[in-house]
Length: 314
View 1: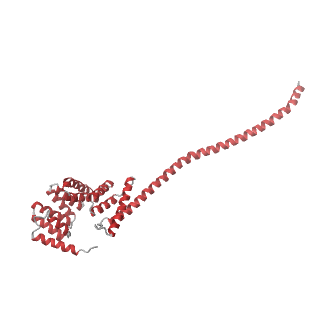
View 2: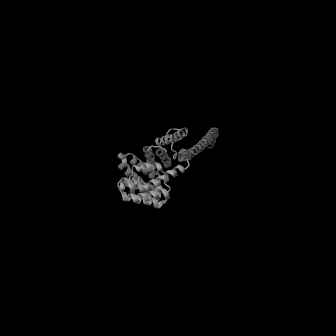
View 3: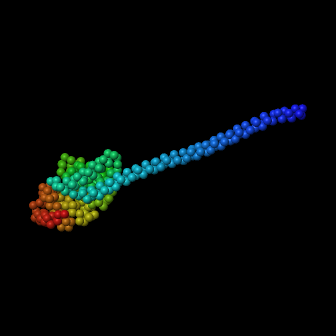
């Protein structure tokens, strides 16, 4: 039994020895595969981690760069706007020659280009400075385009509702059209009053707005309110010639109080330096009918004419 057993062991031993080698090889191969799998899993984990980290980061970077691009576009638009605004501040007070001289054409061409650029920005929903609209409005009105000026000033206050200059200027142009076109008088005088009140709600020390408010009230039949507004304008600026002149016109109209009219006209000429003989001549047929033939009126007008001739032409 023992020998048999030994024999069996002896006979079987080589077989056992052969199976152990195969197992070792298989085990080594399995370990190599597992090692490679572990490495691949590690690499995959790293890739997944990188993807988890980098993909959102890439999105953040893209969002950030896109924001920078938008900001640069806005900045470029603002720079262009500031350049146009600076140019307009120089050009808007200029009255281009009605005979279209070379200089007048250059000014008009420059303004036209800025107006075209402004329109393109509007159509592209890009921001346009209130000041650009304001200066375009000044140029339009100074060159006889009152309705276009009204459009620009309305755009200015839409872009910046706190721009009291634009509100006051809008009021002034409404008044000018009211005076020139009787059919629009009541409607535009009412709009002028509202615009002047808007300006004063923002800056209660804006004398021009008070003066415009006075004229609007007068056109709408509120004489006491008109006088009060013009006097407030004078309180703000004692040398505000337009306010004195407006009071002279108001008191002379319909022979309301010719004596006070001459008093305020004298203050306009002698104290505030009134200097517009063309306007004064035109108003002889309007508000100054009751005083135009008086010696005082003729004397004051002569002073204004001489003063105007003495002013050097720039």
